Length: 237
Image (cartoon, rainbow, N blue to C red; front, side, top):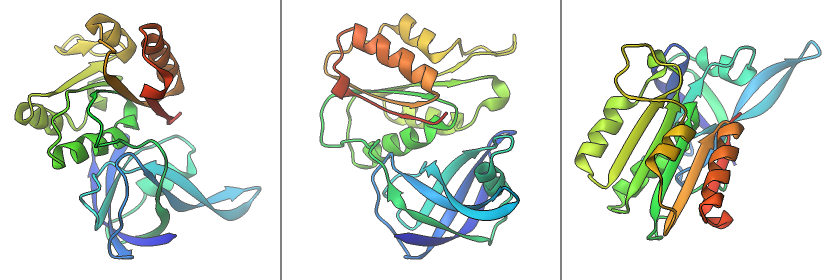
């Protein structure tokens, strides 16, 4: 189903990441599952001709917010989708396909949760975490989020507030190329996972980001005895 929406806010999260809020026009509200994405219609130039194409963007907002969809978009050099979205202005309208995708969280389960993200792979995972918290679910949750350097940090205050409010939620943000001033965790998320020695018993994992990270983390968890069906992933690049 095609949906129509209007841009109502744009947050410049970093030098190359924006959060764009889309207020639903038609339909006025929609239902979706935490972790799903929308496919936004953009114009691409191919062989000198303009063509319409759909580009997928994970929803960063939880399903409880059903009248406004928020997406987190990093600017990719030469990328027609991200370039188009980064040029949007408040008040502009656009079309997208109704949310879909199978990288979704099961709120009725009881296992502990491990989330691992790199870059804007945080988008569906943030939606999942906020949805679970909205539902009053108190399953132990640990998030490992890998970014490059201090200038790539965002959502830190939001996650800090959540972890303070919900003691069963633990968040580790690690920088792979920090400056000497960085006092937080350092190294790739895979290195952090090795150091923390995650227990895989009664655990479900949700991985989102670059494929190299997903392969490495998945192998690490399988080697520790985790079953394939307990590991869910979605690659961004």
